Length: 434
Ligand code: ADP
Ligand code: ZN
Image (tube, rainbow, N blue to C red; front, top):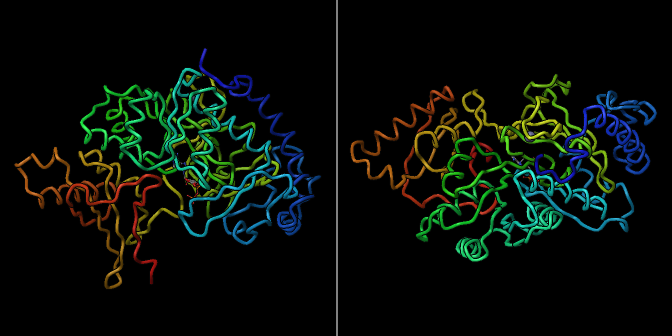
């Protein structure tokens, strides 16, 4: 028997979940049509009425919502309940432009915390655990979500927020934290600081980490697992849909189970909007079927990934999404070639470098340039056989194999690339300035 928070849902049959989704979708569309003029207009323009939606099979008839709609409707235009019914605002990190705000009723908050509790129990969490939450608290959803989930499970919760890394480690040692929650880039930074303070993973009591809010590679997972002596689990979410816990990884570590009793996932072709069959790669779209205050219908996340209903060893039946490769707007087009920063990260870590890197794209004489700055590590420094420029060439060649285009690699001094305490900034695209 696995460690589940709500086994009746997490392990329910496909038929049970589908019936629940059908019923909730129908009610949700009525709610939104009646209470959100912005979305009612979108439905009217498309010629769809609430009566046309009788099950999830009709989902495709509904119009999409995009981040631009949220910016248009900012601040209160998407609110589906009277303001007096809402109790909380969170806002996106603004990674890709103007921030958008999302609203919650108390019921919305309760369900969101349940989702995060599922994520904590999926990594083996129980009331005996000490959960150190080092996601940022405040407008960002990371801190609040995992904090709420940890309370639901009954864990002893350390609401650290991000930053002050030496204190993080001191508390981790003093209170014998067993589960850590933060961005993967911050986990890597914590591991680096731990070593600098003269400790090893053996000094810690950590058993698992719940890392998300940004893309990260399997290579990064292995590095973090080794340096902190834990199992590292992915968690996914976005403010518009609720926050972390939209999906979460179990002990199988093979993708994230989507909380399908609250969110219906679709994969679409980002160009045409057409729904793609299960297993194909495309843009992830979510419909919130239980949210009251800010119910997004067919919200286009711009995250690129794949869904799978393959049986999972953990016993959960909830559909799984693969690790997102990045957002469609993270994808760089360099000399006509599609490049995801995560592909570069894979090569760097495979070659023994750390996740301290930065990608700089520019345009010189009408040609795109790709420069990659990566830090020299102590281990590579002691390898006297090759000089730095030979290493740069070797790395550039490995990246060329992965991407098909030639980058310029610069090996820079250790510690010269800014560390991240939240979402790492991996790319500087100077072309956008023109
Ligand atoms: P912003 O869009 O400003 O970054 P959020 O803080 O709401 O606002 O971040 C949500 C986004 O973060 C998601 O749409 C996705 O791109 C990214 N994200 C969240 N979790 C993960 C994860 N586990 N893997 C990859 N990307 C993630
Ligand atoms: Zn599973």
